[in-house]
Length: 328
Image (cartoon, rainbow, N blue to C red; front, top):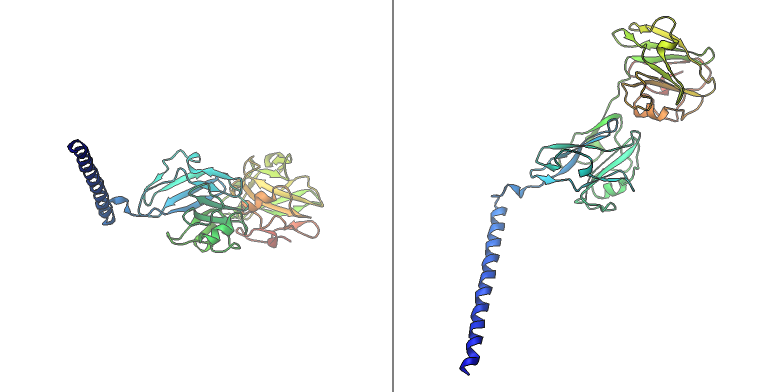
């Protein structure tokens, strides 16, 4: 009997010792948690990731951390809609760990005309959970992809609201502000050189200088669309400089019925940069070549708008005026 009970007694002693060790670990863990709750750990705050700027001309997005704790965002996802997802880590060479009040710039191809941009913490792209869909902004037109989700998640104000004016689009709110009210577009300056008159009967274009200094436009380009480029120096017969409030007329073969005319400062004919695509006008019908670029550059109001009536077509606005309303 003595040999039977001795192993049992030793087993019970061993079990009591292990149980005591587990309790000790548990108590230590709770103490550490209490210390963290008391604010002794610097990581007790919250990171808040927001879009700070969207530049559709340079295809760049600035993310910022408006919270009071650091966060790693490399595994987050940018999204423009179904099939257009990209992980943050693949869009930048910068460190993707964001300390409080720091930012990171991402390269992401966006539609300059109209689009809607989201950022997700995971690839759960149908989510309306505000801890997954962190932020949203749409520009150019309403009802962009994901806007309904963003509204449901409290990350946008209304599906019909969007940021107007030109790019870049800037967030002006605080960490708790969402929606179009807290976004500002950049008013587009129409620049100094403007198309003043288009006469399709005589195939002549007259430019005016609405700035305060003399312009030399010899290296500028006329364009009616792909394959129809012509440098000013090749068609100007009376010099290429224009004094303030002066004019310059050049010859250019145009379709008298329907066409769209652009003037570029360089031969980057697909550009939507307003310092490159300087002015635009279309007549006879909308949706002419380069109309979408002109709208994106802030050089025309809407791709469907066109000057009606007979040639010549005359601009009657000021340097800051853009669109069909200032043509007759």
